[in-house]
Length: 89
Image (cartoon, rainbow, N blue to C red; front, side, top):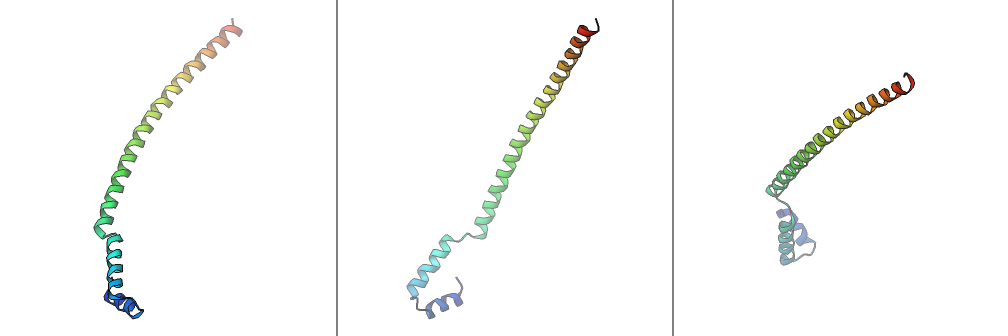
């Protein structure tokens, strides 16, 4: 809390003890630059973790889709073979 703010509070009728208590409360509750930097770092690490997890999940889904494509191809081939056998025999 700046000196001008302290003087304004005292001019408004706050006692020195009240101003001191308010300043201590603000200092205790306010985030410092290092607090914000630490939070930013933790947030970046969580983003990296989530990105890694999503990348792994997407890779698994791609494998499943590839398997389904092959299965559908075989099913289609068998259906064509059955159709040909039934009507072209």
